[in-house]
Image 1 (cartoon, rainbow, N blue to C red):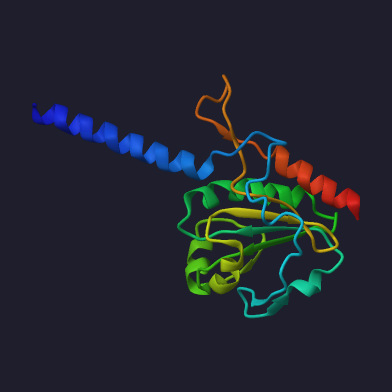
Image 2: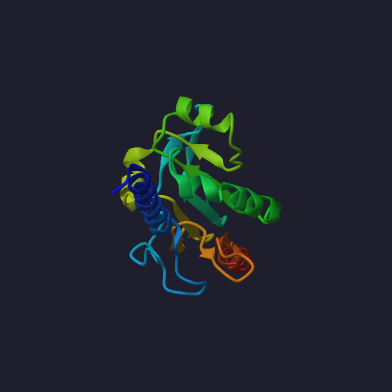
Length: 188
């Protein structure tokens, strides 16, 4: 086999492996399909006391009576990073609705601050939370929708990716997340 053909084949295999990895992290069922994490749904969101990026202690009980979207992420997670602009837009669109937007990460404050030098994430960020995150498993991203009574109503991975003729590469389709947040706001 000529060297050029070998490298072409190697590049092809690398691309396929990368595609398989990315789609395994970001492919999700269609809207209104079964939950990604059904074992979490219906349970009370566990209490916590965690520092924010400024060292101020944040307690889950501080948000009693308010619906929430809690995102579990880390700085080296490609699907986590890809969904951030959409999550930021959801926060803007639901401003004034009383929804709490939290981002909980196992990464330390310094790592997150460096990350935020080049990325925007508008949620309240709670670093150094690896032990707490293990209560939910160890898959990223995880988006947990909690009602005003503190009960988990939905638990999803990344914002679903939709493929159609206009977007054969796919696009992040946040309509499902919008529906979830809308229901939580109306339930108050």
